[in-house]
Image 1 (cartoon, rainbow, N blue to C red):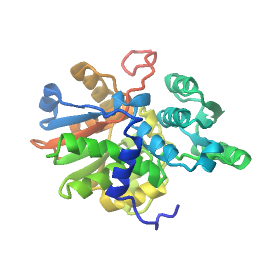
Image 2 (spheres, rainbow, N blue to C red; image 1 turned 45 degrees about the horizontal axis):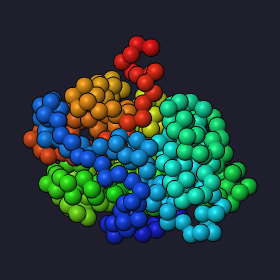
Image 3 (cartoon, rainbow, N blue to C red; image 1 turned 120 degrees about the horizontal axis):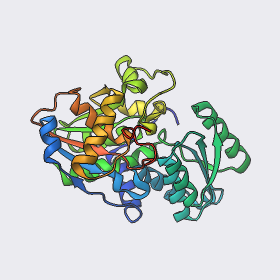
Image 4 (cartoon, one colour; image 1 turned 90 degrees about the vertical axis):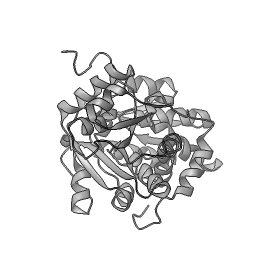
Length: 321
């Protein structure tokens, strides 16, 4: 799909919301006084860690797969993912009754591999590079005719992910800032489309590990740049910014800021301790941006999308193991 194609609109996001409503959770919006004090802002957390498969990815995957024609669906679906999107595709495919094949890097967290297998999908392991993932998926598509459910670079995925922001803005309508992590850019793209259509004055900020900052570099340069292989604890963000995603981001997003690895770990632990909920490292990135003062948020009402809660409990970053 060309980056010159029409961009996703609020109407697309609303249509996605209607399509997936019966299949996903309307996740809660939580607050936390301790984190308000730590950041100087009034924070509203959209808890997609409570979503089906434990991550926002259920939204985009269901939107695309439930929207397939019967002929397409009969040929099955394929994707490549390090975990949350993989589980989301597997679940949505099971609900639609179509076969799913998931290409997963061998270093994907065990908890995420187990989730994919539990939903009945076929896992094809590959080397942990984007090229290896894409090549394996392309071979499966050529052999089976399956439909690619791209993790982020697809308008149907973007519209589905935007439904999280749609719900957040219904539940917390007076936000001044909206923060999401950015890896491939599906969530940030959909959130920005939604926010700017509903609240034109609301500032949308992408947050990214400094060790995986291709989106920030691309945003500054005004063109999509390829960075070195991401080396970050935030395993859900170890991907490169998508072409369609960049087209939406450059149109609708106000800024992208980066955070340290130590900041991610600190933010993750603080959320666990303060909110009594489990989030994964990728979810902690926008919280780290607030704690590290990467953007002017003092005194403002800030929406934060906590993207997922799938964590390998045998490898916690503060466990010393």
